[in-house]
Length: 165
Ligand SMILES: Nc1ncnc2c1ncn2[C@@H]1O[C@H](COP(=O)(O)OP(=O)(O)O)[C@@H](O)[C@H]1O
Ligand SMILES: O=C(O)[C@H](O)[C@@H](O)[C@H](O)[C@H](O)COP(=O)(O)O
Image (cartoon, rainbow, N blue to C red; front, side, top):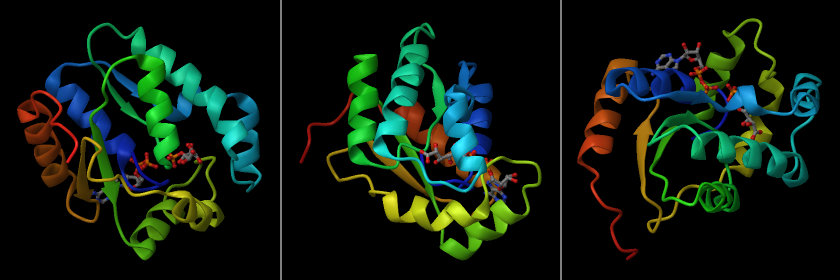
């Protein structure tokens, strides 16, 4: 999870590959209308995101066993909605970095539908995972290899979800 450009697709794909699990790219499940809105520089609303989260949740539920997914999941309600739809607890990896790092990455990513002008709305919508969420926050400005290693360590040693504090 995380805002656009944080590296969730890069990290998620590598984690899935190393652990031999399916990888679902959340962007690919957006209804066409959502992609058109973002391409035009319009931030998505809750109403735009619920159907997407339902489609993505159903795909994850049908993935067979557990799977890795890249999904912005910016608000707590989105994360809870996704878990409820899937009917299983979700373990989150949150890639996060300063705005200037994220902006540079978005600007250096030619051909992607998401314009850098939407970064501020992404950051304004982001609700940091709470202590009661099952989540590892990754410093997204570190090298990909470092982040993937930390993520794999967390995923493979996580065991059962701890009781909320
Ligand atoms: N840790 C990192 N260090 C340097 N560049 C990165 C890192 N993670 C991702 N990138 C690059 O930043 C851009 C955005 O990454 P991406 O995985 O597409 O992010 P997201 O899926 O969150 O939008 C890509 O060009 C990717 O290669
Ligand atoms: O909830 C949202 O507003 C979107 O899911 C958004 O966060 C996502 O970032 C875009 O789909 C762009 O795709 P990238 O995350 O790959 O930039």
